[in-house]
Length: 303
Length: 303
Image (cartoon, each protein chain N blue to C red):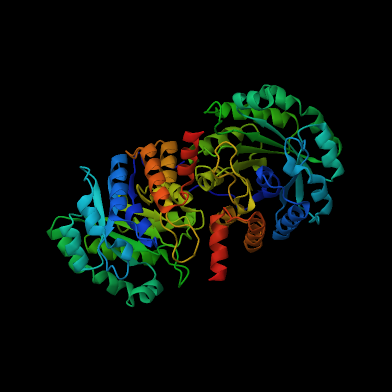
């Protein structure tokens, strides 16, 4: 058996990546409460905001309000998505600790979504990257469609490696490799992660898995085996899959924490408090949590 | 990376283990159609019936009707649960290919459920085991609570090994190790499987995982790594968890098949037909399939 990391960082993406696709507007107070509950659980990194055009992502229009209202937990990194300099300036004003830039590993996805090549799309972030360095903000690069693309299908590990290099050269402190449509399986995951680790320090590479085909937790376990020690997850499994209506999106944080507990891997996070946070936001949204561990642990409490 | 098995056997347990806990009676015609659809998909082993007291498990009262009505696919093993000689006689009359006996790896579970020790409970199956041999039926032993127990909590791998030995000594052809309450995580799974494989030929050991905490597929992947090549799963994830209301039960077959496809492991099963079967039974039950891959693949078809 491969040695697994002794500790991992879990990046909670529910408040941003998770809630972003909710059709009904979630009030800033609810988002604030969610973020506070999560930081209270011990997360060292929470994706809390996106400074994007409210025309494109209305749910994120209250990002500045949320960032202003949350209670900052010392040591916790609050991240914000910043598509451009306008977004960066807003993130800076909102006192984000980390800004997130992004690109696709799929040429077809890049062309279809933002009408330019991958290379161009990454180059456009040069200003944001420089500004982040100037202001001492952390810079994270997020690579979508790293394991498959809704338009072109397969994505070569070499394409992922190419985007990793470009983001590294822009000065990224951390890079996450995302299975945007949840199609990856375990060995493919290991292949891509090992390829990426030849371009960037492995302890700053993150896995962002979607559970669309039920594979996310197996992919996380497979990634642990090759030494990946940062994982994204979403409380209560917030966030659907825009490419397959009714399908599952982000892996649920509670399920990931349950795995780490079982493996004896330290996260610094209190699962019980996360279960509460998951119940809180699921009740607000008026639906059952998509976290299996969350639902099982909540059911156990009441039985 | 460990070498994975090149092919695996998937035992479809939906028609019995899956439907058993359904409160509403499912007509024999529906069960028959489900079994036929599954054998049509290529399963070499389907758990189709249980010859148990209809007082205890009313849903299984039509087992003989189902076994009489199904179209037998040559080479497919149709299994039936047989708690005693009466059950065995019924299974024999119904032309079951395999009878399933069972016991718990948890002393507390055994005492609480059947009011006797594990050792006694296994010994009681001696008649069934002998009769199976006499009549040339396959004999499978099923070990519940092998990774945790709703009453005693932890279960030692040594307790599992002890039940494996007892079932082996009764002449079992195959033994499945079941995580009845879905609490196992990946490394624990490997430890228990490796321990069991010291008592019984590894290629006749099966993993039966529940997804209550979202861990089932990671546990299957971890089991593949230690050489386990038989897995139980339930189409559409049929079967809840009686120990945690509202929680998830059996791992969905579609998710397992998707994993195997991704790993290049042969199953002989047509995933598309399984997706159809999952949609068929879910529509009958009037609810969304619990299979993530099943839902994603079905959504993809209609998009």
